[in-house]
Amino acid sequence: MMKGYKILGRNYSSKWGEVDIIARIKDTVVFVEVKTKTTDKYGEPWEMVNTWKIEQVKKMGEVWCREYGWEGRVRVDVVGVYLDGESPRIEHWESVTN
Image (cartoon, rainbow, N blue to C red):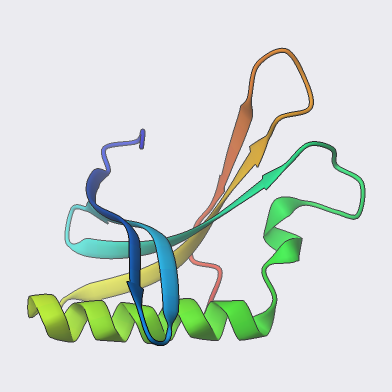
């Protein structure tokens, strides 16, 4: 991932679900939901991430934090990957929760 993020894990799963990417930037661990679309029909990728999915990612973040002993800052991001042209286009939405 760009922007100075260090990838800590991919496809982290438990009985509560899965987190696509776990990364760290400075003093924050980021739980990332990745959505891939081939067109912008029906909205942006982040719009495909509903409240239920965000809550699931947050729960998975809590599980990960307990497992790895992380007590610092956390947030949930969404990364959209568009495969509708010659080369992929990637957009990153930070802190999609309050």
